[in-house]
Length: 132
Image (cartoon, rainbow, N blue to C red; front, top):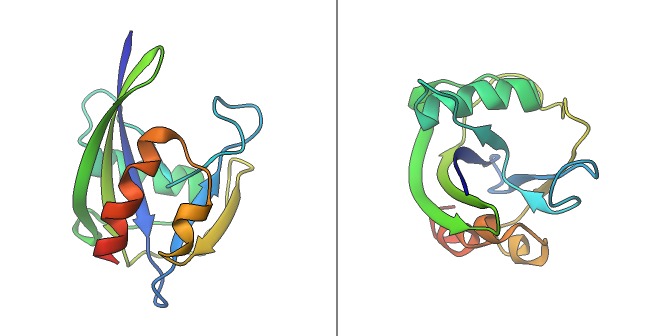
């Protein structure tokens, strides 16, 4: 069983919409929607990993002080134990460009439930809706 820590972010625009990204067809859990972010590398804290991942995935820059920790979830998949650390970010620099070929969508908090997400992400939707 693999254990993995992942930092994810609800990027919230001035209208209160949240950015979600669609997993590419060539990755595990293809075509499901998720919050942007990625794996926490050795020696990184989750918020540091998120700053790095947002730059690598979406071509935007933010600082640690702009990330508000919300909650975390632990989920067990068939071959993977995952801990997702969820942050909210309302301030970043740059224009969002999906650099990994993923589709993006800005959605209202009510619409989040209508997007099919990996189980671990979907647990966070109800919590996130209260924070936006």
